[in-house]
Image (tube, rainbow, N blue to C red; front, side, top):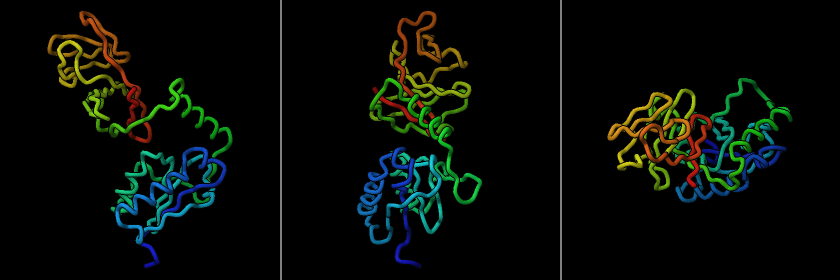
Length: 228
C-alpha cells in the first residue's frame, strides 16, 4: 500500500484539455469533494502534464485501478467522486478505451470537427446550461417517460434514433402525456384525444394548443436538457 488509497490525475496542460473544459476548476472541485467526504488524507488529487491523448479530453486518470476517463464534463465530476474515488466503482460510461496503447492524439482536423459539432449544438444559445436527465436506455425504445429536472416536469420521447422533450402535461386538462401513446409521428393524449406532432410539438387535428419543447442532447449514453 502506498501513501494514498487512490491517486487522481487531472490533465491541466497540453494543447487541448485546457481548451475543452475548465480543468483547473475540476481539480478544485475534486479536492473539495474529498474534503467534504473526509477523505482528503486517503486520496491525492494532482494536476498532471499532457497524457498524449490530445483531443479526447478533458481527461482524468485514477490509480491504482488505472482507469482513464475521457470527455469529462463538470457535471460528471460528482459521479466520478461518489462512484469511483469514494465508492471504488468506476464510471463505465466515461471510461477511455481507444484500443491502442501509448500515445493516441487526434489530428488537427479531427479536433476541429469535434469542436465544431459541440459548438453547433449550442448555436444561438450562448451560456446555455445543460442538466442531466437520464440514461438513454431509461426511456423505452420508441416509448416515452416522464422526468422531473430542476423543478420542471418533462416528457422524454424516443422516436427511432432520436429523442425529444416536451412539457409533461397535456395543455388541455393537465393530464400526464406519459399515459398516452405515440406512433413515431403523432403523440395522442387519451383523455380527450388531443394530438401533437412528435417532432415539433405542434397541435394536430382538434388540438388547439401545441406543446412547449425543450432542447435535448444525447452525450455518451446520457440525455441532457436545457431549461429556458
